[in-house]
Length: 281
Length: 263
Picture 1: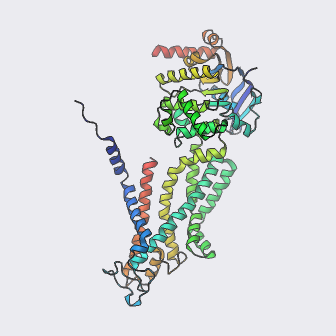
Picture 2: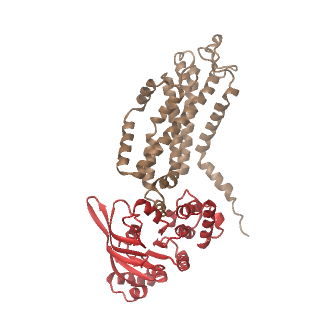
Picture 3: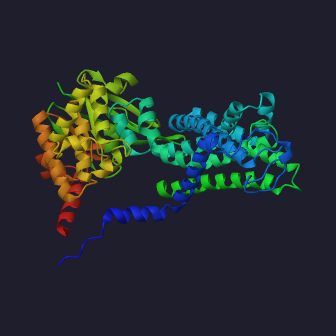
């Protein structure tokens, strides 16, 4: 009698899950965060902007889970609304960076020669600036609203993606299927778009995921310095900033946004690392 | 008049400040419906000849000489003319089908590209043609295969798809650069048989690049032996392989008998 073969599908699925525990952990955390951010107007216990001076600086309690700030606003509600700002800024800033970086890397890598040299020197120059000063300088000139912040973070963080894509393209263009595509009469643009670009999706996706964490951190830094999201609109960075003055008496004001930033950035990094292991090994 | 005529073709590669000559003054013709095999050891320049015809060599290659397909001059054609020629009148099949198909595009998408560019067929018609060509190259259930990715097919099937892609626009010359080298021996026989059948049915002209004399003997009409970038000897297959005049040919023949002795 032949032994029953193991259920292959279940086996493979289980293996994939074990291998990508990081992806699952990061993904779950981010999923939860996204749900909270999207549903904030309906699930927040209070209005994040409602000032109530008699209730100022209350410690965490059943009525205010994460306490209140010096103006008596509910910190949990402010954190929930802050999550919307942080996630949107993170994702869109990285979107801008990925689009610019991919285009630059693709053109530099595929066209090569002088074009490559010029583009890569631009990348080197951009990288030579400490990005935080570049950000501060640009934001100081423009007005610090959410849209400017997203675009400026994107414009100062595309260089890594450009280098990554260029390196991928350099190795891809030596592959035989690119020669084969030329041999059936494909134009240069067509080869770049249809044959090369889809092949760099995996590494770009990984870099983008890791980049979102970085962008959220950058936004927090800017808001903390007062050049990011402007009060009274809550963002994790400016909640942290407002809590700074009451650090001695109200630990929950600085700890809670700090934990939110930590968990979110960590979740994006776990997800990114997990994806890297899954796709790029 | 010959379908393809190549006169005094030379190819050199720029290396640092010097030129390294890979192909040296090679001339040959291919008649309509004829299979010419170029054989030779690795590095003898046979692949450079093949790629030079549609100017597929890397930018550091310097080509001189003349090559003409019917009346169209190839080596000084504009990029636009070349794009129409590539895949349209000269089609290529490469050595390793596993790497010459794009891993992230379906078989159908790649096949359709070739058909849509080089024939007046609309999308529906092109799809029908794609299925028809897959059937011609012996792929079972072609409608389903259109949606398959290259990694879902075996090496032999992949090479059949490559053949279908190459032939789909009805080229007059097929350049097959070591089309069976990367395949298993049993699959090699099948692909060769397919290539020979298609060649006869479509009255194709084929430039076959190979180092395998058994392959050459099976499907070529004439053979050119390359050695050190030069065409050492050429003529009808029977004559060259049975009464080799040049040392390079004799060496290749000896290598074959040594191989068959072992297996």
